[in-house]
Structures are given as structure tokens and as C-alpha cells.
Length: 110
Image (cartoon, rainbow, N blue to C red; front, side):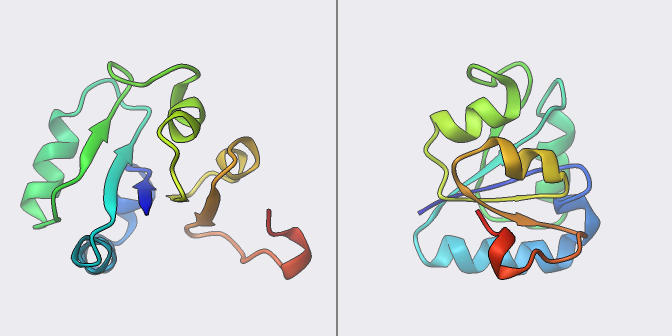
């Protein structure tokens, strides 16, 4: 599977928890991505290294494909995306896990 994560407000909200989550996905052989609206990847690279995250491909504004973050999620064929912004969930075709949000009821899930 292709699994992506927003950076600010998502990975940064609980680095220890997300390190465990990403490590489990990595051990399963899943492809991991950070897709962020930040301009450059350097601070993200430093954060991932500092918190001992597994290898993840980073897509930032200088590398985003098409229509920003949501366009990149769709173009990469992401299966599952973690984000803290409900607007992202409504704009992409992949399944989205909203971080720090009230869980959606069954009828609201895309």
C-alpha cells in the first residue's frame, strides 16, 4: 500500500506514536510518504531523523505534483492518508484518517 502523512499538525502532533505507526507500515513493506505544503523538505528531513522515523519519500511545495497537496495525493495513488485538515479528506479519492478530529460516523466516511 501507499500511505502518506501530512507533516505540520499530524506527524508533529505526536512523534512517538507516529514513529510506531510508520514503523509498522514500513515493516509490512508499505511505501511511505510525507506530503506537506511546506516550501522545502530540510526541516522535515531533520525532524524524521531526530525522531528515528523509517525511510519516507518527502513531497513539499518545491516538488508537489499538479494541484498542491491534494493533487499529489491523487497522482501518487495514495491508498491511505493521515492529515489534520478535514478539507483534504473531502478533496482526495484515497481514504483519509483525520488526526485530532472528532471521528466521523459510519455514514460520513468516504
